[in-house]
Structure formats: structure tokens, C-alpha cells
Image (cartoon, rainbow, N blue to C red; front, side, top):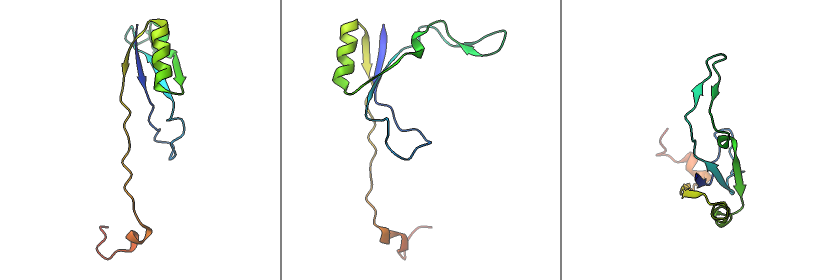
Length: 97
């Protein structure tokens, strides 16, 4: 069974970096999602799409996948570039408005 190992990015609703340090294991969908004919809700045939496991390190996530016999793909984490800025830059004469 194929799983994906990644570090989640921060949501758009938060300014901090909470819940982005752990590593997550998610199963790849086995069946496509389709709307249910009666109510119109989106559903899928497999329940593994609801499983989301969190680990403290990438090595722990890989060890779990090896122990349970899952094929895994590691998605590289995107690091943000922090540009240092001084408070005085807000009052520069040639500042772009």
C-alpha cells in the first residue's frame, strides 16, 4: 500500500508555526471520490483516506512504514525564506508605497 510522508505547512488562518514540526503519514486514495446520488455528499469507497498519523520525526514515520510493509514517498518540506527587516525601513525616503 502506498503512503505519503510529509511535514504539513501552516494554514492560512494562523500566523504562527504551530502543528508544522511533526511528520504526517497519509494513505494514497485507492478509489476516486464521487458524489453520492441521493444526498450529493462526496464519498469514497476506502476508509484509509480518513487515517492521518503524526510522528515526531521523519525516521519514526519511515520505521512505521517499514514495520507495516507500506511503500512510501517522502515529500520534501518547503522552508520559508525569512528576510530580515528593520523598523526604520518603514520610514525610508525611497520606500515603495
